[in-house]
Amino acid sequence: MFILQIVIILLATKIAGQLSIRLGQPSVLGKIIVGILLGPALLGWVHDTEVLDVFSEIGVLLLMFLAGLETNMKDLNQNKNAAILVAVGGIIAPIVLGYFGAQIYDLSNQEAIFIGLLLSATSVSISVQTLRELGWLNSKEGSALLGAAVLDDIIVVILIAIAMSLFAGSDTNLALLIGKKILFFVIIILASKWLVPRFIQLFSRFKVTETILSAALIVCFGFAYFAESFGVAGIIGTFVAGIAIAQTKFKEEIEHKIEPIANGVFVPFFFVSIGLAVSFEGIGNQVGFITIFSVLAILSKFIGSGIGARISGFNTKSSMGIGAGMISRGEVALILAAMGLESGLLPTEYFTAMIIVVIVTTLVTPPLLKVFFGTRKKGQVDNSQSLSM
Image 1 (cartoon, one colour):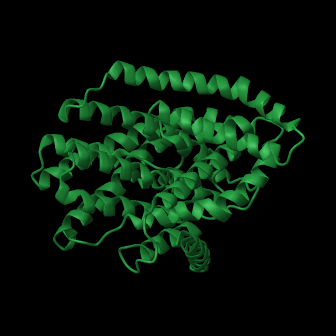
Image 2 (spheres, one colour):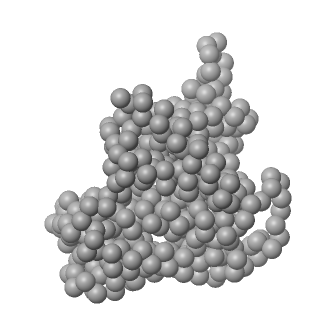
Image 3 (tube, one colour):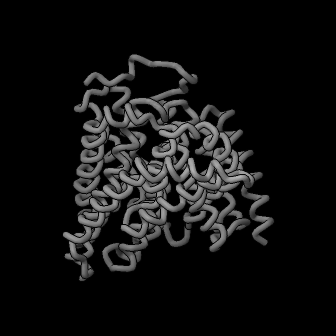
């Protein structure tokens, strides 16, 4: 049965992606929409299975690995202050607006705070793929966006842990939690600088097939496992792995070999998996809730992160593009929503509605990025979008 699902998913995502491009939109948008169409909410041809989840997880890990390979370290370093401001603005605004939005529905303070934290999550996996298509990933805007997303993930995880400790009785040692995050980055930075280049070089001497590709995948998934073992999202691990390998002489060879595997097989499953989370059951009475929180979710990131980008020196159009790139909550918010449901901080009656809000934020991100950034040809330098520090 899964073999048939592979055929359906690969065929449908490529056709949907092409149709999306023909309509002047990034292909990502069509691929996510076709996931909703194929899933239980409509046609029911594809169902969420353990194997599909594995393919999906590999897809998003490889997507962020490719983003790391294409990241310009000089730009990333130059935009670190912008990344901090974008991340902080993109956390404060959703928490505040989410909290007051929850008050409309008479939710408790604990539930309102959790919803605010849920809305403050960011997943740039969708933005990464869209920016790659548009030619903006390896730009100052792209670097600020990626840096902000990494910081956002760390801060939100810590805030969620504090909330669950205070409100849900979770036994969390905050000092240990923060210490683990700091230790993770110290170890992974040292490994990136000293271990990764030597490991790739060692493998390159082996007289067996595809040693460089295998070495890259070992580093990619090894970093992902290491990140998750420290309570950090695996996509951050693979992103750092990509940056580390990008500093070696094997960068182009690895990128050339990884991209067909990622985009040809695994990444389509990630896009479809987002659509599979949609369910229209029992939402007839929650249209108002979904509408209000979708608007709040979109505006809070757009305004909060956009203001952070503007303060850091980006012009108005670039700031709006960066704000738009932070809107997608993707798989990160889906995981947090499940945690909230389990801990009792997200009311059961609003769980499905919040899932749809997350999907809405994911759907609007690609077209908004197209509007604010447009398509940039390879090698093009757009001075109007540059950062004046």
